[in-house]
Length: 152
Image 1 (cartoon, rainbow, N blue to C red):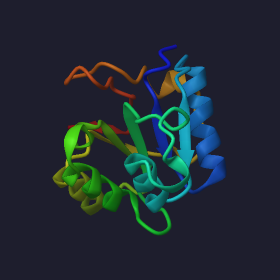
Image 2 (tube, one colour):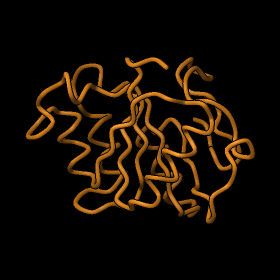
Image 3 (cartoon, one colour):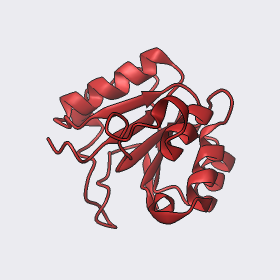
Image 4 (cartoon, helix red, strand yellow):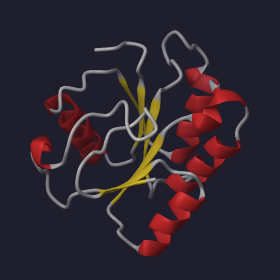
């Protein structure tokens, strides 16, 4: 485990968040996962505002996993904020996770600069049927997560 490789998971559904964490664990990805429950919380975390001001406890992530449909700000709004932010944040690898396979959502995510778009399974699948690891990829930052991922 690399303690410096922090994953920010923005997911409003507690069960989906647990499934993502379980899938990461089963795929032997044991990096710290910081969970926020809505899009505004994700932005606050990334900016280091409010309860996320102490970077020792809330380090900047190396990867963001964003649900597309969240309260306050959706995943696309968070992605747009990330890509227009200053400094190194705009280079943060972002994967959108959604139960939507609507082409319009997928196209919009790629227009905004998402690194991958993952359609959530309707039922939990064993990670070995979904793919491999997160870290390193076509751009040396991400590996394919398997079927359902649409790499950039």
